[in-house]
Image 1 (cartoon, helix red, strand yellow):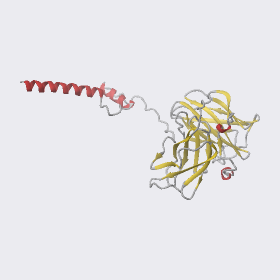
Image 2 (image 1 turned 180 degrees about the horizontal axis):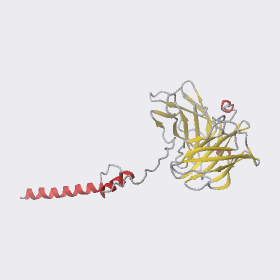
Image 3 (image 1 turned 90 degrees about the vertical axis):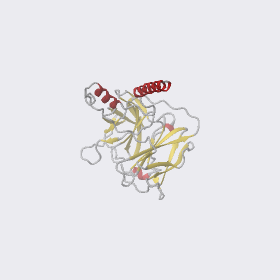
Image 4 (image 1 turned 60 degrees about the vertical axis):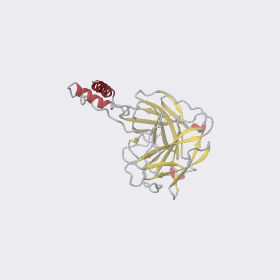
Amino acid sequence: MKVAAYVAALGAVLAAATGVGAAVGPLDEPAPPAHAAGHAAGNATGHATGHAAAEPVRAPAPGGLAVAQDGYALRLAQRALPAGEGVPLAFRLEGPDGRAVTAYDERHERDLHLVAVRRDLTGFQHVHPRLGADGTWSVPLDLTPGAWRVVVDTAPRGYDGSLVLGADLLVPGDHEPEPLPAPATAATADGYEVTLDGGLVPGEPSTLAFTVTRDGRPVTDLQPYLGAYGHLVALRDGDVGYLHVHPEGEPGDGTTEPGPRVAFTATAPSPGDYRLFLDLRHGGTVRTVAFTVRAGEPAGDPAADPADPADPAGAPRTDHPADHPADHDH
Protein backbone atom coordinates (compact mmCIF):
# COMPACT_ATOMS: atom_id res chain seq x y z
CA MET A 1 0.00 0.00 0.00
CA LYS A 2 2.78 2.39 0.90
CA VAL A 3 4.51 1.70 -2.43
CA ALA A 4 1.27 2.25 -4.33
CA ALA A 5 0.67 5.53 -2.51
CA TYR A 6 4.23 6.67 -3.23
CA VAL A 7 3.89 5.87 -6.93
CA ALA A 8 0.58 7.72 -7.11
CA ALA A 9 2.10 10.77 -5.40
CA LEU A 10 5.12 10.71 -7.69
CA GLY A 11 2.85 10.54 -10.73
CA ALA A 12 0.95 13.58 -9.52
CA VAL A 13 4.19 15.56 -9.09
CA LEU A 14 5.40 14.63 -12.56
CA ALA A 15 2.07 15.58 -14.09
CA ALA A 16 2.20 18.97 -12.38
CA ALA A 17 5.78 19.52 -13.55
CA THR A 18 4.79 18.64 -17.10
CA GLY A 19 2.00 21.18 -16.97
CA VAL A 20 4.37 23.90 -15.75
CA GLY A 21 6.90 22.99 -18.41
CA ALA A 22 4.27 23.22 -21.13
CA ALA A 23 3.19 26.62 -19.87
CA VAL A 24 6.69 28.06 -19.55
CA GLY A 25 8.34 26.32 -22.50
CA PRO A 26 11.88 24.96 -22.76
CA LEU A 27 14.36 27.20 -20.93
CA ASP A 28 17.15 26.65 -23.44
CA GLU A 29 15.16 27.64 -26.53
CA PRO A 30 14.40 31.19 -27.69
CA ALA A 31 10.86 32.48 -27.71
CA PRO A 32 9.07 32.09 -31.06
CA PRO A 33 9.21 35.12 -33.34
CA ALA A 34 6.37 37.60 -33.20
CA HIS A 35 4.77 36.39 -36.41
CA ALA A 36 4.84 32.79 -35.19
CA ALA A 37 3.10 33.84 -31.98
CA GLY A 38 0.49 35.57 -34.11
CA HIS A 39 -0.24 32.39 -36.04
CA ALA A 40 -0.51 30.42 -32.80
CA ALA A 41 -2.95 32.89 -31.28
CA GLY A 42 -5.12 32.82 -34.38
CA ASN A 43 -5.27 29.05 -34.46
CA ALA A 44 -6.06 28.85 -30.75
CA THR A 45 -9.23 30.90 -31.21
CA GLY A 46 -10.24 29.01 -34.32
CA HIS A 47 -9.68 32.02 -36.61
CA ALA A 48 -6.98 32.15 -39.29
CA THR A 49 -5.75 35.59 -38.22
CA GLY A 50 -2.07 34.90 -38.89
CA HIS A 51 -2.32 36.10 -42.50
CA ALA A 52 -4.81 38.90 -41.92
CA ALA A 53 -2.07 41.53 -41.62
CA ALA A 54 0.57 41.96 -44.31
CA GLU A 55 4.08 40.91 -43.40
CA PRO A 56 6.32 43.94 -42.80
CA VAL A 57 8.82 44.69 -45.55
CA ARG A 58 12.32 43.94 -44.39
CA ALA A 59 15.08 46.28 -45.49
CA PRO A 60 18.41 44.81 -46.56
CA ALA A 61 20.64 44.28 -43.55
CA PRO A 62 23.50 46.78 -43.38
CA GLY A 63 26.91 45.52 -44.39
CA GLY A 64 30.21 45.72 -42.58
CA LEU A 65 28.95 44.30 -39.28
CA ALA A 66 30.72 40.94 -39.73
CA VAL A 67 34.37 40.11 -40.30
CA ALA A 68 33.50 37.04 -42.38
CA GLN A 69 30.76 36.05 -44.83
CA ASP A 70 30.21 33.32 -47.43
CA GLY A 71 33.60 31.81 -46.67
CA TYR A 72 35.49 35.10 -47.09
CA ALA A 73 37.22 36.82 -44.17
CA LEU A 74 38.85 40.21 -43.61
CA ARG A 75 42.23 39.89 -41.88
CA LEU A 76 43.97 43.02 -40.62
CA ALA A 77 47.74 42.69 -40.33
CA GLN A 78 47.53 44.59 -37.03
CA ARG A 79 44.47 45.13 -34.86
CA ALA A 80 46.05 48.17 -33.20
CA LEU A 81 47.94 51.05 -34.82
CA PRO A 82 49.49 54.24 -33.44
CA ALA A 83 47.90 57.64 -33.88
CA GLY A 84 49.33 59.85 -36.60
CA GLU A 85 49.05 60.93 -40.21
CA GLY A 86 49.79 58.53 -43.03
CA VAL A 87 49.85 55.47 -40.75
CA PRO A 88 50.13 52.37 -42.97
CA LEU A 89 47.28 49.86 -42.77
CA ALA A 90 47.74 46.41 -44.29
CA PHE A 91 45.16 43.66 -44.65
CA ARG A 92 44.15 40.64 -46.71
CA LEU A 93 40.89 39.18 -47.89
CA GLU A 94 40.97 35.42 -47.49
CA GLY A 95 38.78 33.22 -49.65
CA PRO A 96 36.94 29.98 -48.86
CA ASP A 97 40.21 28.10 -49.48
CA GLY A 98 41.98 30.10 -46.77
CA ARG A 99 44.26 31.84 -49.25
CA ALA A 100 44.53 35.54 -49.97
CA VAL A 101 42.28 36.67 -52.81
CA THR A 102 44.24 38.23 -55.67
CA ALA A 103 41.59 38.60 -58.39
CA TYR A 104 38.64 40.98 -58.16
CA ASP A 105 35.79 42.29 -60.28
CA GLU A 106 35.65 46.07 -60.51
CA ARG A 107 32.84 47.88 -58.70
CA HIS A 108 32.39 51.63 -59.07
CA GLU A 109 35.66 51.81 -61.03
CA ARG A 110 37.74 50.22 -58.25
CA ASP A 111 38.57 46.70 -57.13
CA LEU A 112 38.09 47.61 -53.48
CA HIS A 113 36.73 50.55 -51.51
CA LEU A 114 37.79 51.07 -47.91
CA VAL A 115 36.05 53.21 -45.33
CA ALA A 116 37.80 53.98 -42.05
CA VAL A 117 35.88 55.84 -39.36
CA ARG A 118 35.91 56.14 -35.61
CA ARG A 119 32.98 54.55 -33.83
CA ASP A 120 31.67 58.02 -32.99
CA LEU A 121 31.53 58.53 -36.79
CA THR A 122 34.34 61.11 -36.87
CA GLY A 123 37.56 60.92 -38.88
CA PHE A 124 35.79 59.46 -41.93
CA GLN A 125 38.10 58.38 -44.75
CA HIS A 126 37.08 56.79 -48.05
CA VAL A 127 40.22 55.49 -49.74
CA HIS A 128 41.31 52.93 -52.31
CA PRO A 129 44.17 50.69 -51.17
CA ARG A 130 46.79 49.19 -53.45
CA LEU A 131 46.97 45.44 -53.98
CA GLY A 132 50.28 43.61 -53.76
CA ALA A 133 51.16 40.50 -55.72
CA ASP A 134 50.74 38.36 -52.60
CA GLY A 135 47.18 39.56 -52.02
CA THR A 136 48.02 42.12 -49.34
CA TRP A 137 46.26 45.47 -49.55
CA SER A 138 47.91 48.60 -48.14
CA VAL A 139 46.86 52.20 -47.63
CA PRO A 140 47.91 55.14 -45.40
CA LEU A 141 45.35 56.43 -42.90
CA ASP A 142 45.14 59.48 -40.66
CA LEU A 143 44.35 58.10 -37.21
CA THR A 144 43.40 59.71 -33.91
CA PRO A 145 43.12 57.83 -30.60
CA GLY A 146 39.94 55.82 -30.20
CA ALA A 147 38.03 52.81 -31.43
CA TRP A 148 37.88 52.63 -35.23
CA ARG A 149 35.94 50.54 -37.72
CA VAL A 150 37.45 49.47 -41.04
CA VAL A 151 34.92 48.50 -43.73
CA VAL A 152 35.80 47.07 -47.14
CA ASP A 153 33.38 46.97 -50.08
CA THR A 154 34.59 44.69 -52.85
CA ALA A 155 33.76 41.82 -55.21
CA PRO A 156 36.14 38.85 -55.39
CA ARG A 157 36.33 37.41 -58.91
CA GLY A 158 33.22 35.34 -59.52
CA TYR A 159 31.40 36.50 -56.38
CA ASP A 160 27.74 37.32 -56.93
CA GLY A 161 27.27 40.95 -55.88
CA SER A 162 29.28 43.05 -53.47
CA LEU A 163 30.99 41.72 -50.37
CA VAL A 164 31.05 44.16 -47.44
CA LEU A 165 33.07 43.17 -44.37
CA GLY A 166 34.24 45.10 -41.32
CA ALA A 167 36.84 44.82 -38.57
CA ASP A 168 37.70 46.76 -35.43
CA LEU A 169 40.92 48.76 -35.20
CA LEU A 170 42.21 50.20 -31.93
CA VAL A 171 44.28 53.39 -31.81
CA PRO A 172 45.62 53.75 -28.24
CA GLY A 173 45.59 57.12 -26.49
CA ASP A 174 43.36 59.44 -24.53
CA HIS A 175 40.16 60.39 -26.29
CA GLU A 176 36.60 61.45 -25.65
CA PRO A 177 33.87 60.31 -28.04
CA GLU A 178 32.37 63.26 -29.89
CA PRO A 179 28.60 63.75 -29.99
CA LEU A 180 26.91 63.21 -33.32
CA PRO A 181 25.99 66.53 -35.00
CA ALA A 182 22.29 67.26 -35.01
CA PRO A 183 20.32 66.51 -38.17
CA ALA A 184 20.66 69.34 -40.70
CA THR A 185 19.78 69.94 -44.33
CA ALA A 186 22.89 71.91 -45.29
CA ALA A 187 26.62 71.23 -45.13
CA THR A 188 29.71 73.08 -46.32
CA ALA A 189 33.18 72.10 -47.47
CA ASP A 190 35.93 74.25 -48.96
CA GLY A 191 33.56 77.01 -50.10
CA TYR A 192 30.91 74.65 -51.46
CA GLU A 193 27.45 74.46 -49.92
CA VAL A 194 25.33 71.36 -50.31
CA THR A 195 21.68 71.14 -49.32
CA LEU A 196 19.75 67.93 -48.74
CA ASP A 197 16.20 67.30 -49.86
CA GLY A 198 14.60 64.13 -48.58
CA GLY A 199 15.07 61.77 -45.67
CA LEU A 200 15.21 58.13 -44.71
CA VAL A 201 12.07 56.08 -44.11
CA PRO A 202 12.85 52.87 -42.21
CA GLY A 203 12.30 49.80 -44.35
CA GLU A 204 11.56 51.69 -47.55
CA PRO A 205 13.74 52.92 -50.45
CA SER A 206 14.23 56.65 -49.92
CA THR A 207 15.50 59.33 -52.27
CA LEU A 208 18.29 61.57 -50.99
CA ALA A 209 18.74 64.51 -53.35
CA PHE A 210 21.61 66.96 -52.92
CA THR A 211 21.99 70.39 -54.54
CA VAL A 212 25.50 71.81 -54.92
CA THR A 213 26.29 75.53 -55.03
CA ARG A 214 29.43 77.63 -54.78
CA ASP A 215 29.39 81.32 -53.89
CA GLY A 216 25.63 81.20 -54.26
CA ARG A 217 25.74 79.84 -57.82
CA PRO A 218 24.64 76.35 -58.88
CA VAL A 219 27.49 74.02 -59.78
CA THR A 220 26.57 72.52 -63.15
CA ASP A 221 29.90 71.00 -64.17
CA LEU A 222 30.54 68.31 -61.60
CA GLN A 223 33.03 65.71 -62.76
CA PRO A 224 32.40 61.96 -62.73
CA TYR A 225 33.73 60.18 -59.68
CA LEU A 226 33.53 56.40 -59.27
CA GLY A 227 31.08 56.12 -62.14
CA ALA A 228 28.65 58.83 -61.03
CA TYR A 229 28.48 62.56 -60.32
CA GLY A 230 28.85 61.80 -56.64
CA HIS A 231 29.50 58.93 -54.28
CA LEU A 232 27.52 58.50 -51.06
CA VAL A 233 28.37 56.43 -47.99
CA ALA A 234 25.71 56.04 -45.29
CA LEU A 235 26.63 54.70 -41.83
CA ARG A 236 24.31 53.85 -38.95
CA ASP A 237 25.09 55.42 -35.60
CA GLY A 238 25.72 52.89 -32.85
CA ASP A 239 27.18 50.00 -34.85
CA VAL A 240 28.63 51.64 -38.01
CA GLY A 241 26.31 49.59 -40.21
CA TYR A 242 27.08 50.27 -43.88
CA LEU A 243 23.97 50.94 -45.97
CA HIS A 244 23.45 49.95 -49.57
CA VAL A 245 23.26 53.17 -51.62
CA HIS A 246 22.64 53.51 -55.34
CA PRO A 247 23.11 56.66 -57.48
CA GLU A 248 20.24 57.76 -59.68
CA GLY A 249 21.61 57.82 -63.21
CA GLU A 250 25.17 57.96 -64.47
CA PRO A 251 27.30 60.19 -66.69
CA GLY A 252 26.61 59.70 -70.37
CA ASP A 253 23.18 58.09 -70.00
CA GLY A 254 21.55 61.00 -71.83
CA THR A 255 19.43 62.15 -68.90
CA THR A 256 21.68 62.69 -65.87
CA GLU A 257 23.03 66.23 -65.61
CA PRO A 258 26.42 67.08 -64.01
CA GLY A 259 24.78 69.11 -61.27
CA PRO A 260 23.61 70.95 -59.43
CA ARG A 261 21.36 68.05 -58.34
CA VAL A 262 22.85 64.69 -57.36
CA ALA A 263 20.46 62.00 -56.13
CA PHE A 264 20.72 58.57 -54.54
CA THR A 265 18.42 55.83 -53.30
CA ALA A 266 19.04 54.29 -49.88
CA THR A 267 17.09 52.06 -47.53
CA ALA A 268 17.46 52.47 -43.77
CA PRO A 269 17.02 49.12 -42.01
CA SER A 270 15.84 50.71 -38.75
CA PRO A 271 14.84 54.03 -37.15
CA GLY A 272 17.62 56.13 -35.67
CA ASP A 273 20.51 58.36 -36.68
CA TYR A 274 22.65 57.89 -39.77
CA ARG A 275 25.69 59.82 -40.96
CA LEU A 276 25.92 60.55 -44.68
CA PHE A 277 29.26 61.25 -46.38
CA LEU A 278 28.96 62.65 -49.91
CA ASP A 279 32.02 62.72 -52.19
CA LEU A 280 31.91 65.27 -55.02
CA ARG A 281 34.53 65.94 -57.67
CA HIS A 282 34.90 69.43 -59.11
CA GLY A 283 37.92 71.15 -60.59
CA GLY A 284 39.91 67.91 -60.33
CA THR A 285 39.54 67.71 -56.54
CA VAL A 286 37.32 65.41 -54.50
CA ARG A 287 35.63 67.00 -51.49
CA THR A 288 33.49 65.37 -48.83
CA VAL A 289 30.47 66.87 -47.09
CA ALA A 290 28.70 65.20 -44.18
CA PHE A 291 25.11 65.16 -42.93
CA THR A 292 23.23 63.61 -40.04
CA VAL A 293 19.84 62.16 -40.92
CA ARG A 294 17.31 60.69 -38.49
CA ALA A 295 15.36 57.88 -40.11
CA GLY A 296 11.66 58.04 -39.40
CA GLU A 297 11.60 61.77 -38.68
CA PRO A 298 11.44 64.88 -40.89
CA ALA A 299 14.72 66.40 -42.03
CA GLY A 300 16.51 68.64 -39.55
CA ASP A 301 16.91 72.39 -39.64
CA PRO A 302 18.96 74.02 -42.40
CA ALA A 303 21.86 74.97 -40.11
CA ALA A 304 25.05 74.07 -41.94
CA ASP A 305 27.06 71.06 -40.82
CA PRO A 306 30.70 72.08 -41.41
CA ALA A 307 32.93 69.45 -42.95
CA ASP A 308 36.10 71.04 -41.59
CA PRO A 309 35.82 71.28 -37.77
CA ALA A 310 38.42 72.88 -35.56
CA ASP A 311 40.21 69.54 -35.31
CA PRO A 312 41.35 68.82 -38.89
CA ALA A 313 42.00 65.18 -37.99
CA GLY A 314 38.27 64.76 -37.56
CA ALA A 315 37.38 66.13 -40.99
CA PRO A 316 36.19 63.58 -43.56
CA ARG A 317 38.47 62.95 -46.50
CA THR A 318 38.95 60.84 -49.58
CA ASP A 319 42.19 59.86 -51.28
CA HIS A 320 44.64 62.69 -51.71
CA PRO A 321 45.58 63.15 -55.39
CA ALA A 322 49.27 63.06 -54.50
CA ASP A 323 48.86 59.70 -52.79
CA HIS A 324 46.58 58.04 -55.33
CA PRO A 325 46.78 59.81 -58.69
CA ALA A 326 44.98 56.96 -60.45
CA ASP A 327 41.94 57.59 -58.29
CA HIS A 328 41.50 61.09 -59.64
CA ASP A 329 42.16 60.94 -63.37
CA HIS A 330 38.82 59.48 -64.51
